[in-house]
Image 1 (tube, rainbow, N blue to C red):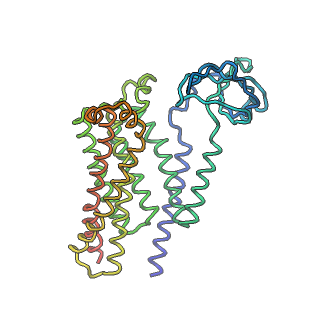
Image 2 (cartoon, helix red, strand yellow):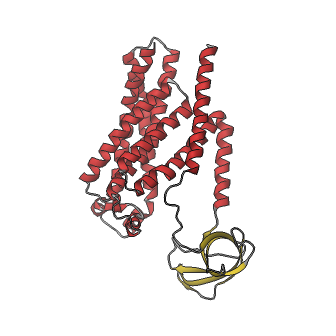
Image 3 (cartoon, rainbow, N blue to C red):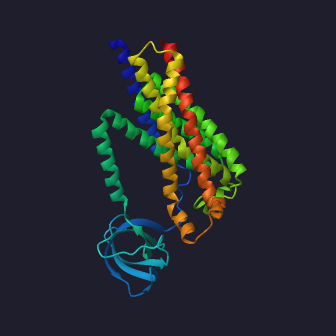
Length: 377
């Protein structure tokens, strides 16, 4: 028994060390899009010393004009210098920001060939330190609650973020097939996340098999119904900006369809692990359970879990489009017009393709667990 545990522990330790090496490589890996687009410029953190709102025009809720500010640069080549900066207001609540004395700002400064600063634009409030505090709180809480498993979850988070930023997005920008790249990255994340959370166990293998199977089904459904709904990928926010930036050969529709799979892959993974873990416990406590009864138990467990998971998926998608639906209702738009709009149809596509994928996880995981668990016996 000790030999088996030792082998398992060595296997998991070796896996974690290998993952740390991969994370280091990904962190250092260039995306291929690191070129500075604006020459003779630098982004810096600055403290707002004073503001001048004399050129700001208030029109109801909106503000126009130019807010002037005196700032002290706190990072970069010009650290310590005190300069004047400009904050242009467009009359948009979503884009405009107003600074007050004492604020920290992210500022884009420009300089000439002699190194003299010739302009300073106040881009946004500086939030990096606040984001680090929030992420730090999450890390501390999950480690305190889950112990070593929490540490492995953090590794899974890091791998997911680096894989998306360093592999998925650059590959799509370079013109690789979005569906194929998403499947490769998404399934890699699924495998590594499950192994980190559950270890090299039979429940992990069952969850991996069913999750990957459902990922292919979800991708196929996204392509079929995406074309059936006649929805172009330009429905995604900021997608047309990619075309204007020179990436005219991008297949926005394929990117949109790949995004449908990626959006629900986490829920599919979660449900597969829940069912496989529950069935693993059943077999441990009742080794004589039959293949048929084990599958039946998995299906019964899946019925209740699928109901909550699909509702969770619906809430997640509805929450992101709550303001759009409020606008439609406030304008008295007929329900048939709303349902036929491209934006709402895209969300319906997102939601129900994801829900179908979740529903299929239950029988697939149950059958896979039945085959793996009973074969081992």
